[in-house]
Length: 140
Length: 495
Image 1 (cartoon, helix red, strand yellow):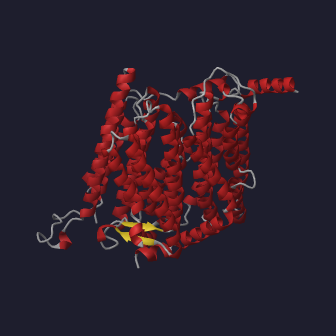
Image 2 (cartoon, one colour; image 1 turned 30 degrees about the vertical axis):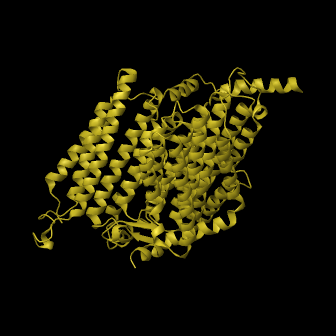
Image 3 (cartoon, helix red, strand yellow; image 1 turned 180 degrees about the vertical axis):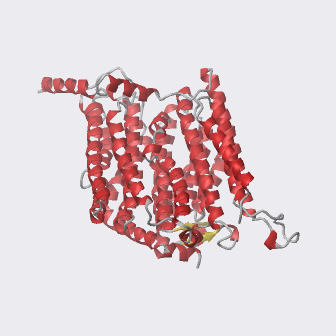
């Protein structure tokens, strides 16, 4: 089987554009990136099938028919992408409602741990262990 | 008895539909979910017994085997089914208890039950699938449900953490789908048993690309080190039962997919060394992250990432002893990690927070809670005679038997990780339980018996895993033998 080069270039462009958009901060662009990537993957699956006449019994010789399985898989994948797109849209809308923007935020706790490390302090353990020995002494 | 095989997928799906219809009647919803998951547990246990005589195969819809979708219940799948059904049932009971105690304000219960059942269906579908595309669908079912559960209630914090999780998971799904497309283009089939012969016939380079795509997709889901950064950020913000079930099951579904594909589809090859390096870095980086954390839930998330490294270590060794130990460790880790997250939820109710600098004195004020934390913590750290110790011992023995330099490095790495896990959990014990209370003004929320009992049941299951370790280890050893031999699986599907 010889896949169509035009189809494969289209897949490459979709994947490249999708990846760039996925690396953006705003969720709306990320959403567009996910859609492009999803469609790129669908086209890739389509390229896996031998092109031919429609796979309907009685209309053509079975040897000349295209392979229907990848198309069935793409249908499933399209439905899944649709659901995910709807969910991401809802997520972006909710984020906009709550915080006035739809930017993907940093992990606040992560930043806190990093600041502790920069000041060369342990995450709370040392000071509190000191407390702990004191109380033991008092009890003793 | 093959008609039992699709039931663990169908029952939760039907249950989800009925609970969705019953959205106005929380009591009926609860009754349906509990009975459906109990039935799933029973069916899974029966399947485990039946699969001892060889894998059970069902061609869905009656399509002849390589054409239609097949469900394959071999011993690996049924073992995972039993443990996951037990864990999901316990977590469901826990969440019902929590909902009852809180008056349901924070948890929109009408969505919770259907979504939870769909998550279960996705997990069981992934375990039973004998077809790569059906595995993809199983992943998508469980991921879609997990997106809803992780953003449950839609508070600002959960939306923030959920966004990262959703985007990263979507990326891994796209990679998986592209990998499936390439595998189909190269071999013309997606039936795993049929793929065995056809993949072996491919040139090495093509095989390695296909294997790399699948490993990348599963690696993100299983949270293997360079692909694990999303996990400690997103899991802790979800409600306690949701975090517990995610920690126990979702990453293990990724690990299951890795075990299945590495043994059945891509045995041998140079990628095993890559897996070993990934295992070492996952262990060490994960546990160093855990040591630095000051919040209990985040600390547990990092230990979760770190211990995925142990599972990969066994898979990377690709020897019978290594895979047997990895399967045993997976079962142990599902139970123990879920238990610890459930206990973290109880601690949060008791002490008002999971920040370690605000907790204290729980050993005196809540002795039952202390015991519930202490046992699984020792188990996770691998203190003898617990199952965590047995699993690690098995892995280390398998590594020593292998004898390569990389295996010795990993033996050292796993011992170090085990020690650091003990250090991290001992810190939690010292701060939250041992020292005197820091802020006595925190008013504890009530923890009803329905939350404590499932947690205690899972702690007991963890201990039981130790008592039954002999027969269980013998079972995982035969599982590993069958996986490496490949013929039992292939002959069952394509007689």
